[in-house]
Image 1 (cartoon, rainbow, N blue to C red):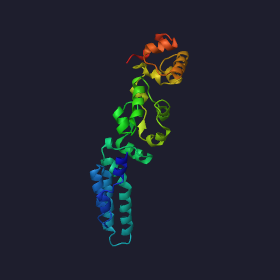
Image 2 (cartoon, rainbow, N blue to C red):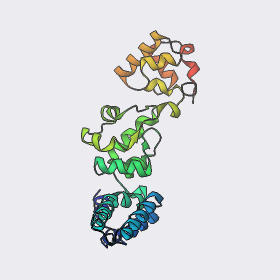
Image 3 (tube, rainbow, N blue to C red):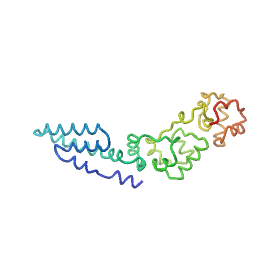
Image 4 (cartoon, rainbow, N blue to C red):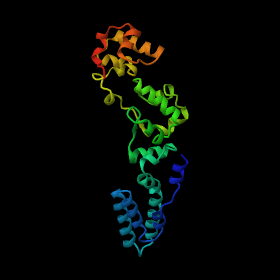
Length: 235
């Protein structure tokens, strides 16, 4: 993570260029061009036009202070925008929020183990545990499950929260996969067509003895007839 800290501590040359009176707004235009963020270009042009129009007025000082303030405000967003996503780690919550805003969130249930390590900054031991659970059919619903099931330390919670998402429904539609039996609540299983009694047994057995490896394991462990959950599929 030190490389991310070092990258975000940089002050790009265009920030220094913004110190120039009258034309310093063009530095913001340049930043917008580099970051492919054209509202910044428009903002820089507006600041420059205002500075030139007010060049004979005392208000030009306010414009100058404004352009410098905007440049300093945009500095970190600029660095995150131009840095490849694979080289950025959520070193703190504000950085995670900016990464999510500019590069998008990471779906814990769909991402690769590589992304867990190199995009979320998780140690390999936790990435391996999360990946093993997913292969066994675990579908994470929130960060609390990453802590309780994946063994993730609580200290990661605040830093990761802005950057991660948990899209369970689109990953495993109930009619296409039995694996929802490993993560859905009693209420969710009932909405999938499982009887209330069976849903209670499935969840209770799962909580006592861990995830199911297959539909056959569900049948063996709960003694519930196949026909009560076979409609969930075998994928």
